[in-house]
Amino acid sequence: MRIVIADDAVLLREGLVRLLTERGHEVVAAVADGDALVAAVVAHRPDVSIVDVRMPPSHTDEGLRAAVEARRLVPRTPILVLSQYVEVSYADDLLATTGGGGGGIGYLLKDRVAAIDEFLDALDRVAAGGTVLDPEVVGQLFARRRRDDPLRELTPREREVLALMAEGRSNTAIAKTLVVTDGAVEKHVRNIFTKLQLPPDTEQHRRVLAVLAYLRN
Image (cartoon, rainbow, N blue to C red; front, side, top):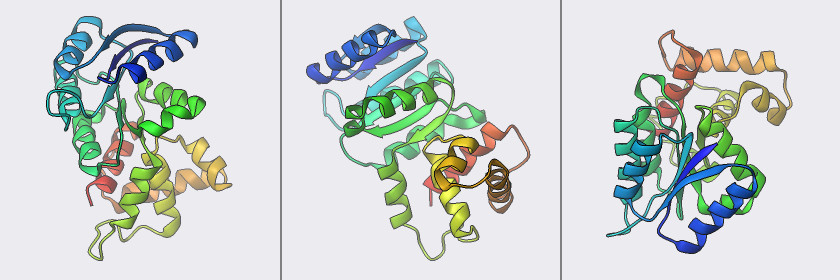
């Protein structure tokens, strides 16, 4: 894959360059701020970009805003965002760029980079158009469920399936995790779409919409 990296931490940035290069990927740009990220995405049209949320000058959400701008200028360009902490609003803003069914969005904690195979698997899924959320984000979303939650009609098993969908898992991967058949997962997914009143469309679009509904409540 052709990859852009944006992180102002030199050690992490160069470490990612080395890791990805050793795995056979081509890092077409490694930059340290949001403006450079946007320029690199527009110039190189990479297969995926890895972006730190907090970059200069204020070290708040410059990376996220640059990622959103990059998606505006190059629609559906895959972006994997890395963050030091769980910020649900950041994931929400990024997922909002998936309007029209374009996936290719990921939000992971930086700690996940240490689990190299899992990180590279997430990167592959994002590059392929999937939506990947860190399990910690999913866990915090469950902790924030309210009494008037519009997702309250989902059964406990359907919530498990939706949580795994939010992590970017395919139906087959969900079935293996829950130790059930592919057919059982497909039934749960159909029920989720029906209960969330998602209109008939491509399944990828409805999966993204389901994750958005899950994330925003």
